[in-house]
Length: 93
Image 1: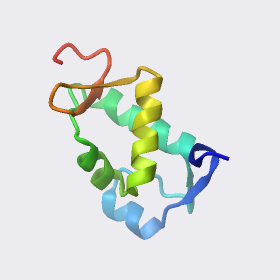
Image 2: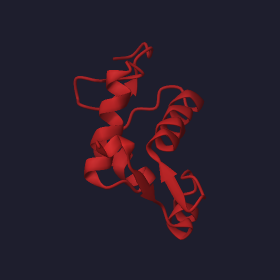
Image 3: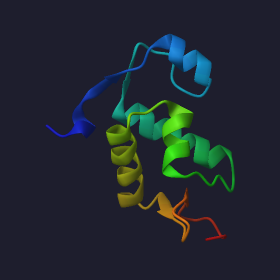
């Protein structure tokens, strides 16, 4: 089974410190994808590097890479010339 099929634990203490993370005791990959999509939809022009994504949502490196990869594959996100992740329908690439 790929990492995308696994369930990841997210402590409610860490989640409350970050503010944006789900507050349930376990967070699934679909939950993370929905959360990240929602943030990009809510904040026009959001422009984050991989390390910023990882820190913002408290993700381990492998999970961060898989989530970003899934969002790139779905053509929801794209990478800018400087390596940041932006919505694929953003005008300023």
